[in-house]
Length: 111
Image (cartoon, rainbow, N blue to C red):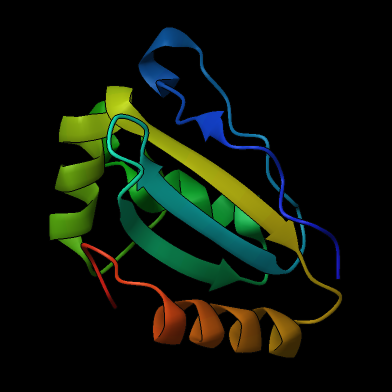
């Protein structure tokens, strides 16, 4: 398992911003830059693709996500949101890490 990336500003795809994330399995975490408060943690088989669904389509997001409240929240606070990622060797490893993060941290969106 790799180390966590550095925290990065969440990009604005409408201003040609882009994500830097693993193209394979891993975990991603969002926080508020101004308060260091944790917002969300997630895992995916393809982290880069999954993270594109964190914004609504009208704000440049892609893909599908059942949590429209999370998407709206990220769009509203995007300028104050940072993210980091961690590549994993397998999907199972990513799922274990995500569960551990949810068990040991408090998030605005816990699921």
